[in-house]
Amino acid sequence: MLIAIPVEKDGKRVTNLFGPAPGFVIIDTDRGEKKFINNVYACGGCKEGCEEGKNAADLLAEQKVEALLIEKISEAPFFKLLKKGIVVYELPAGTQTVDEALNFFKEGKTRILYMGSD
Image 1 (cartoon, rainbow, N blue to C red):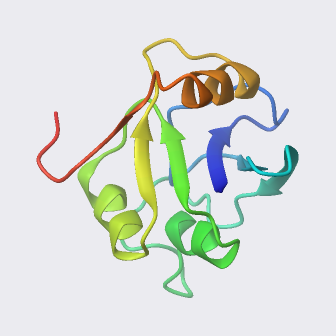
Image 2: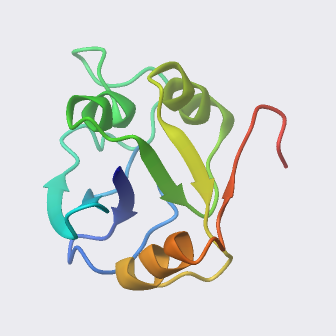
């Protein structure tokens, strides 16, 4: 499974930003491979995306990401991700690093967010 985690520029610290996140670490959970991708659409969190009409959800879909791990996400990007078939998992509050987030996911300490979830 390919999962994405929004991160700071160092590629190690988790951020709660989605659209304006500096980048994402994409992890292939089957192979254990990790890669950092720059968020070329980090335009300050606009709802409609950038000039090309693309946004962070498009970026993840282009990378064939199947799930996003994040502590909190607003409604507009959440629905964009759902439309692209990307499942959103809620990380426990205070998650600091990519490795910590991945461990929470593997240990079942994340929960899938659904429409209308708090």
